[in-house]
Image (cartoon, rainbow, N blue to C red; front, top):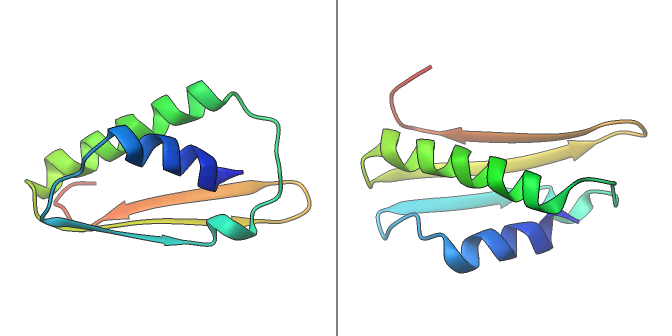
Length: 82
């Protein structure tokens, strides 16, 4: 489910050559009912914030986990901030 969304985002959103991206757990997620465009927009906003915080250099990790009722996406970067 999230792999196609990540593919759509990464196809048109360039984080920059100095930023590495690590994906984990996305291939293990179950199908869920979610507004794809809304989720894609939220992810793009988070990625934009991360890119700005890292000033073009750093590491971004997107990981996911799920249980029988919930799906969790965690986005972290090594830029300064909260």
